[in-house]
Image 1: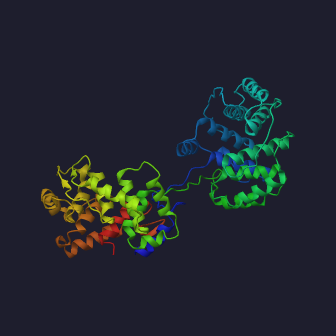
Image 2: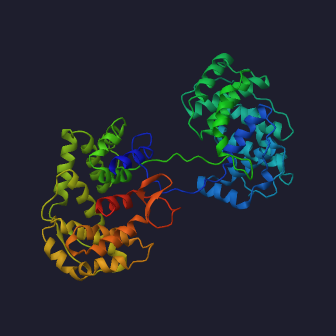
Length: 491
């Protein structure tokens, strides 16, 4: 089972070798900004935009995009305007109105004016003269470089006016950053307008843009559109952009013809630790070719603020991959000493239990941890169950006292667990406690518990992981899988 899980977890690794929780099983919303950019690129290819129907956009589509991306109203509205302009279609919704004050920074002000001009281009109720006045003031000032110039002159054109840029324009042809690519794009647009831009090299721009386009990950629509624009300004072919569009085609929403968001998941120390605790010896093979250890060692030594739990878990993960150096060994000893003699109560239980769990992997359990039992209430049961597992393992200085304090709960645990509702989040927490006292189980108990657990197995990303609920469409979860696998009832 662990080997199959390791294969499934391989698909959950991010760029730095951390594991992410596959709890997202929703359909991503339509990407308004990305779609606008790609539609503009397709328009440059004289694509007929067949299947695009922005009139089919519903208010909930816009709300879902705004909430998922936390995009400000001015960018949402300008994206909708760009969709209208690229498609030649009219939106049947009223975008949110917005105001943007004059900014002191020329690039910020040019961006404000450009966003306002886009909105005014498709909405005749927006007064154009004040926006045009701001654009002409920017052009007269002539500051902010190629990006400010490109957005200012574009604004004047959108508003039906004319502007003359009074500043010198230069570009460094830097393709190493997003900002650099946006500046090269602006330089190309300005050159195509007849502006003199020192440093602009069409052949070099075409070569670098084509190479960069071929290396993009799925969903990097801003860069794809900017690089396509550079190719267009340089008079180069668009084969690499067309290839990107082909890769993006499966993201097209059939109702609107727009592209859906791509979310690149990010792993966490928590997720990676849960994978370690589930896979055991197979974990090292999972991350053998990953930068996991190097990334975590950097976090542990470069002054990054980590919670005590994350620090202990990160140390355990690194130790599972390679021997710890003297500095990390020092951190292990320091953590163990910090928690030695701790009095564990309701207020600090979760943190202490999680640190103790990680220290167990490091074989550095602190001594004399004493539990101060408190009454069992439903909202605390998950924490108390975790505490009972630790007591069953004899970790506390007063483990027997802890087990005695919750004896009634333990005595009734098997029957009460079998009687739980199918979707109760307590099931797997209790199952872990039950697994530590197998003598209390009858053959019938084992059969019923295995049947309950079997109903939670499998999801869209794995046939071996476990879900929180019996609903087959619900996502799997790393900690749930750890508890299910380590209970032994899933075997």
